[in-house]
Image (cartoon, rainbow, N blue to C red):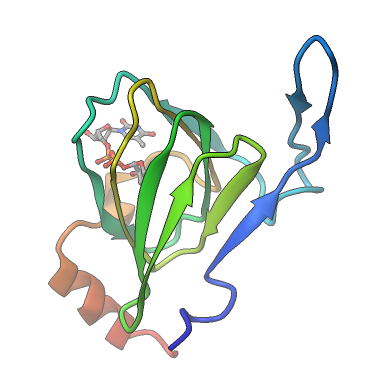
Length: 140
Ligand code: T46
């Protein structure tokens, strides 16, 4: 079974190779399918930590591993899938109403997220049962 089409996909950004180091950029309205309202990042993450464990009613995001690596476990309510993030050029687009869990952080991993909305605790579904119930109320 496939995840709901288009709900999760890889986004590859340009890379400028240079003997001084590589450069990657993101342009609003060009590389990503929403207006960026917020950027946040996770760092000093202890190896063995688990994060996420929720879905968002409206929020769309693109998740990058700027350094190191980690795993994203994705669940659309029907199908589960997992993605390893380890390349700073390659982000994972996650639409609204997708359950996500993160683990297997490497030492020194840095996760950067581009988000479509500002932080709003009311947008979170933090109980899996609430997520499934909310999906049931959506036209699929
Ligand atoms: C996701 C992964 C990658 C804020 O005050 N502002 C913010 O912008 C964020 C993201 C969080 N917070 C507060 C809310 C909580 O008290 O920071 C605390 C931890 O937040 P959260 O439980 O959202 O953290 P993670 O790392 O489990 O999840 C976050 C995103 O929420 C999630 O959508 O994909 O990072």
